[in-house]
Image (tube, rainbow, N blue to C red; front, top):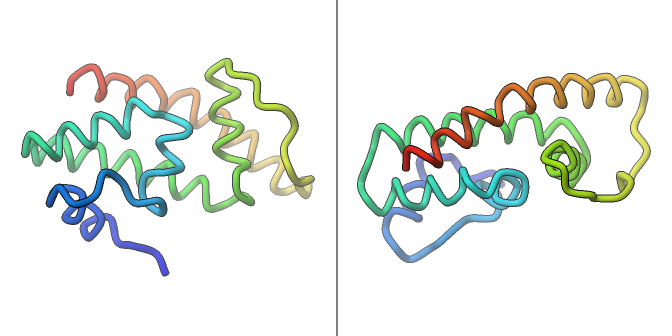
Length: 120
């Protein structure tokens, strides 16, 4: 059962958790800067930064859910220049086309995510 972002944010902000797998593990693997920025914004009580970070995390999650795990994560990490090896499953032509769209999206999206980390 998915965890709503607001619920996850409240749990993490409460200090009893450092992350929730459904909410942050994908993003932490692909864009660790954003996961750290989220943690720091939550601990500092910066609600506006936290809101922007959560929006970006949700954007990544929407894309990641379109593919078998861990296709989006491995692709994002590879775009960042880290060798990941082949994808664990073959993709249909339609999924392959969507993965190309994801690559374009992620490449454009990544600088804004890193900027949030630098701001935090």
